[in-house]
Every structure is written in C-alpha cells, then in structure tokens.
Amino acid sequence: MRLGVMCSGNGTNFENIVNNCTEHEVVLMVHNKKNCGAVERAERLGIPHVRLKTKQDDERIELFKVWRVDYIILAGYMRILSPKFINAFPNKIINIHPSLLPKYKGLNAIGQAFESGDLNTGCTVHYVTEELDSGTIIEQSIVPICPDDTVDTLTHRVQQAEHRLLPLVINAL
Image 1: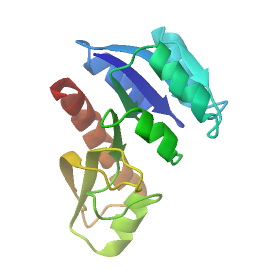
Image 2: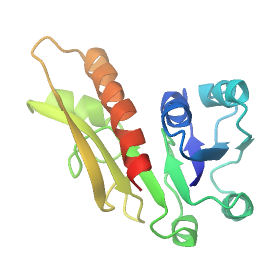
Image 3: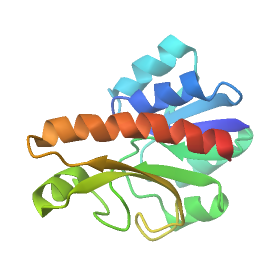
Image 4: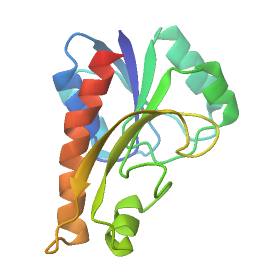
C-alpha cells in the first residue's frame, strides 16, 4: 500500500510507521506546523513532506490523489478535518487516539483519563468520520493507570502502546 501520513507534532508515530510497516511505502508526510519534529524525521528518512495550512483542503486532496495514496494515517495530526476532505477519501483515513474511545474524545484525553479515577486507559485506532473521534473502531490497546502514575508517565506508556498498535493495524489493512 501507498501511505500518506499527516502530523502536527514530534513525529514519533510517523517514524514508527516508516520503520515498522516495511511492506508498505510511506510516500508523503503532510504537516500543518512549520517547526514540528516530524519534518526533521521526514528529512532524515528521505520521505517527501509538505506543509499545508488547515484550510487548504483542495490542495491537500489534490496532493494525496497525485501521490496515489491508498490510506491516509493521522499520526498526531492535531486539527479537525473538513467534511470535504473526509468525503474525498471515504474509509481511507485512520487515526490513532490516546484513549479507549468512545471515552475522552478530543484534546487532553490522557489527562482526562488520569483525573477520572478509571483503572485503565489506552489508545484506539479508528476510521475518521465527520464526527470527532467517532468513526468505527478498528483496534484498541489497554494501558493500566497505576497508583504511582503521573500524567507524564501515563502519557509515555500510552505512546508506547500507540507505537505497538498502529503498525499492527496498518499491516492488517
């Protein structure tokens, strides 16, 4: 498969996809922040990358079509996608979210889980739909919330679970 990845942050999930989905080709990384860490990773890995602002839907749609991507992977892309973009790639956009959806949609999901008193949290890979973090769940990974956890230690363990889960899901698509 030809994969397009969208990032906003450090790019650890992006690099993880490149390194652990070797039967597939990551052909393009699109980012929306000028100085995100994913850019350095893309350059080091030799993956073409483009910065597009959130509202540049037509350009983004055309770019992914020109690169003939089979799936678009949201790997830490911290913007809501427009219905126009989502509908241009039906059932071809997946997201990794740091909670056990349907709990804790949107931002600060790990902090919400930490404060909730829940015994577990985790991460979810799901199809992207117009409703935020509400598409069909593909797979989840449970991460226990330990009594001595801080938000930082819990975040680290959830990210480790993301790094295990996302390549498994992509390789099974």
